[in-house]
Length: 135
Image (cartoon, rainbow, N blue to C red; front, side, top):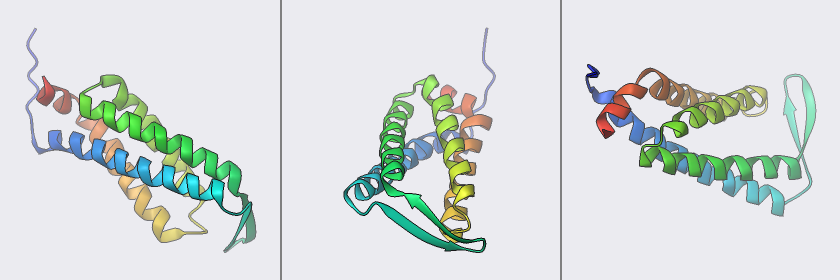
């Protein structure tokens, strides 16, 4: 059976997505290490008032998520199909996390949320093109 999938410029976004995941994972892991080495509690002032975050828990979360993003990004560069689904799930979880922090850091959260949407779009809508280009 022949596959009539045509390759467009979006196939290159698969490589962009993989590199973006590796860079984001490295930054996440770095922030996780900073949180584990640094203080125990952080306070943020939002529109709803003052709220605190357990920095140790936040640090472990970002360290583990960062390492997972790096591994998934490397697997995406290698052409693993399972990595696409895993990347979509990890990025969706990250997007939900950014929505929860939008009151504390609105511009950063909105920027990361926009990148998350682009990554999810590239991997879901143009996944067949990415696979056809690698074949």
